[in-house]
Image 1 (tube, helix red, strand yellow):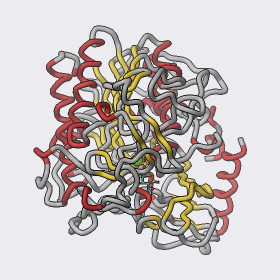
Image 2 (cartoon, rainbow, N blue to C red):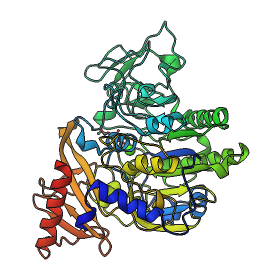
Image 3 (cartoon, rainbow, N blue to C red):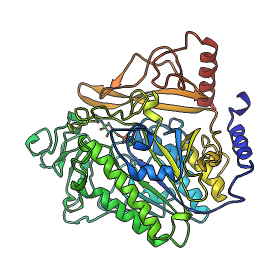
Image 4 (cartoon, rainbow, N blue to C red):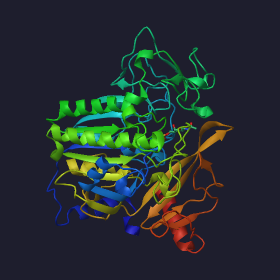
Length: 518
Ligand code: NG6
Ligand code: CA
């Protein structure tokens, strides 16, 4: 175990696995690559992961035609840090300020930073982003009415059609490359996360205008009958309609693929389902019996089916690698009264795990993950390999013959062999993390301490931190003492074995300290 704790050790392990007989690829290969990233989707939210309460036939088909991971991890338990790690190959906690961002936050990944799209671009790919960004824009003050820079275009993307932050944060507009789409210059956009601006109704003043009630944090400017986090004025023609957004993004994803299908492309397709506010298209409303959250998972499933159908129609299905996953675990109530809790019934969004989004328990970061590439990714395989989205950079570099500087992507291990379903041997360890949400009264005041865990084999250590916390009913998993769980025997992390296994506990805690320092 010890020999493999360095990054070099892990790279050697990956290379050895690839050289095994039966490896399908003799050398670099350049399929199209799609990372299809859901938002707040849990391990128990899909029928291919055993859910009996929701039926996701299209995602199940993807899993049946590819490899489904039992130990796929998002790098963190919230969005921005997971996406930062996915795109840079560095764990989010290595940089300062990587936490859930407001909609007007400056660009977190600065121009010049080595990224996954940079690597793929230098290997001959055209790179595109469609969907949720949430990694900051601009240099301090975003010019919503002019040229937006830095933008995803400055860190490796050739094309972008994206939302600045989340569905629940202003400005609720779409950006194409550097410009807000459908912006009327006579109606400029202004955004403020501290003070009310303009005279548009807010959720506080006009609850009668709302599709569903919201907590104080989500009770600022009302757009499309939904109150959001933050205040905005202007840009009326540019505002998205939540019910139509998923179709708009799918249309752009397909347009991107169609236009680039004759050369290798990389598409980071970051869909919103089932993040709040959940307002799926009317054709899905009422279909799950679980209210808007379930309905938006059905919308996600339909979207995946459409994407796969389009790959066939475009004649590129056999030449496209799809990696499907989620940026963090699930949550039922996340600010809006959409009956997700009341209508969940027997549904367990995190499957066998405890908690979900925001949590250091497995529910926070153990997420559904599927890789698919006909003829190359082993079909119908269920893999026990531990893999993390932070590994995509090094793994895809291995696939396409891309390179990256020695000091870049320091946490990204070559996991190409498990990704192709060739081996169940994945990472020997993975770091999980979250940040405490700090609340004053009913308002979220910011992000607090980072909470860490390390998983190695069946063992998981949650490092000692603070007294138990919860956020929106999801326990975070903190304690002032170390916790040690055997996640194979005890996936719900109920029996703390730290007292029984002091040596293992100390060894894993020291290992975690070392990774954090190095
Ligand atoms: C939180 C929001 C939550 C969600 C989250 C980001 C409150 C009370 N909660 O601050 O609703 O928007 O940020 O989610 O404000 S994520 O998936 O993008 O990380
Ligand atoms: Ca998320």
